[in-house]
Each structure stands twice: as structure tokens, then as C-alpha cells.
Picture 1 (cartoon, rainbow, N blue to C red):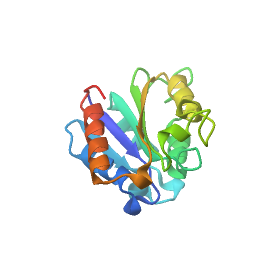
Picture 2: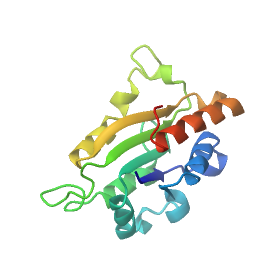
Picture 3: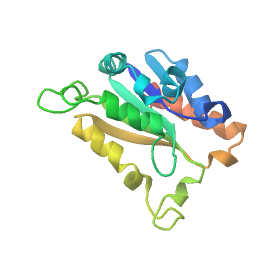
Length: 177
């Protein structure tokens, strides 16, 4: 199964967990990695729609990897969706290029995952917060599979990052996580 990891992180050089996850993804056979800010900077008009569409077409599994920014995806990932998932290609009467592809979200959180609940500080679950991505996947005919969570990243030590990286490898290599 061929996978593509679309990663967006505007402060990647300061990241620990997203950097670790992205680096392990690069080393896995049949996984193509795309770092949006590295490829296009922060200029949404530079996204090469044709190239990105071809890459997505060649994949069986699409993974969006990103840090949660104010309960949303980073700006470049939002622009990527807006620009690349076009009518007639991703959706609409002839838009079937993403149909039946597996779709995963790999999200990192500054807070612990328990804060994303009715009882937590956020008051909403990750399933609720990420509902727009689930709807987008469904609207484009993709199979929304799972949310890979790296929570409490500011408190993670090296062992925590290594364990999280191992779980990510297992996801990308089709093993149970």
C-alpha cells in the first residue's frame, strides 16, 4: 500500500514531535512525504496543484500530519485542501480521484488528550473538533480511518517521542496501533 504524508507545520524547526514523526515516515518504503512549508513557504499561491493532485492520485492512503493550531489545521494545510481538492477532481459529478483512498489524521497537541473532552479544558472531543476533515474525506469519497494523536507534546521526553514514533511507523507499515 502506497502512502503519502502531507505535513504542515509553520514552526517545523522548533518542533520535536512532528519533526520526529516526519523523519521516521521518510524512512519507510512506499511512503512519500510532503512538507508544505518546505515546498511552498507560506505563500498559498505557490501550491502546485497539478503536482499535488498526481501525488495524491498515486497513493492508496493519505495522511495529514500537523500540530493543532487554535483547534484547527495550520494555514498552509487549509490552503492545500482549498486549492488541491478541486471540483471535478476531488468531488462533483466527475470528481472521483480520491474515491476509496484511506484517510488518516496525525495530529499533535500541546495539551494532553484528556483536555479534549466534555470534562476537559477544551470541552469538545478531537472527533468533534476534527469533524470538518472527516466530512471533507467523506465528501471526496475517501474512507476516514483514524486519528493518530500525539498529546501533551510540551511535556514529552525523548522516550515518549520514541514511543510515539514507533506507533507512527506501525500505522504507516499497516500494523495495528
